Structures are given as structure tokens and as C-alpha cells.
Image (cartoon, rainbow, N blue to C red; front, side):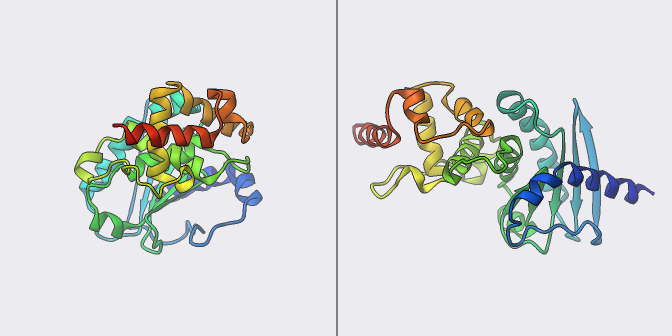
Length: 241
């Protein structure tokens, strides 16, 4: 009975995101089979948020699982409060031996590769990056991928709980970098924009993206300069430091 209730909870969440899933092409490696045998099924609800946890990894480290729960309940409510109060209140984590990436988010579900944690047991803030994608929930809105991933790594930098012990940090600027490189390179640029142009710029970028108002002119609208001019200023400021 308990197993059936868990599966019904997950399927209910899937139905809530069905339209989003149908409108977008399903990426390779992101199909979800909820009928597969799970070795671990768990859930926790706190302060209006609920995390459902599934694992088909027979020996997944319980300390890593506990850290994933802890990170979710410490970080996710803060992200929802700042970036999207309408974000999902029920989230699913799947630790899946059939997935060969690191982690991927699809609607309100985050899929994790257990082998990544075997090799990188301190990299718990993969959770922080991935749950930001749930908060973003841009759907089919016209948002460059480098902005989406840059914001998620900005969030990991700002809100991550375990970055130092994981050896994770923003990538130092190099001459061959460009703002479109995404992830940590773009996140570092966003931190500079926050520190030098507008302390709320990332919040504003995210809001525009979620409301489908993201255009090439947003940089001038927010700072008075084009994205290319901002990048050149950023590069020059790094050269003088």
C-alpha cells in the first residue's frame, strides 16, 4: 500500500507537468519509467514543501541521501522565495542507475546518476543547481541556454552549502572565454554584473525569462549597455585586478 501511495504521488506530479512535457521534444536519456523496481522510496515534508525520493541504486550512500534532503530543504525554499513563489511545492528526486549523465531536470523531477556521487561524494550542490531549474520553469519561453545555465550556476555559487569541500568554484576568466560559454563562466559574469551594475540584475533576468519577456535588448534596458559592451568592460576590469 505504501509503495502504491508513493507511485500515485509521483504520477500526480507528472500529470501536473504533462502539458510542458508534451510541448517540448523529450531529450535523450530523460524518459521516466515509474514502474521500475526501486530499492529505496522515501519522502519528507517541511514548511509547505515536499520531497519524494526514489532510488534503484542498491547501495546508495545514506549519508549522501541525507545531505541531498538537507540541501533541498535549506536551499529550495530560499530560491522559491526570491525567484518564483509559484514554483512547484512537491519535487521528486530519482537516483537512477540507467542514467549516465550527472543530473537532469524535467518538470518537477530531478534525475541523478548514482555513480557521479560514488566518484564525487562531496558534490551535493548538484542539487542546488538542478532545483534552480525547477524554479526557473521557463518552458518554451525564448531564453538562451547559456542564460538558463549561467543563472543556475550563479545560484549554486550564491546558495550552495558544500562548494568548498567539493572543490567547486566559478571559473577564472581566460582570454578565450565568452559570455555564451554558459555554466560557471557565465555565472562569474553575472556575479560581476550584480556587483557593479545592479544588485538585483539576476532576479530581473530570471523574471523576464519566466514571463517570456527575454529579448536581446534586455541588457540595455537593465544597464544602458549592450551585452557585448558589458562583456568587454568585464574583461577589462579583470585585466586591471
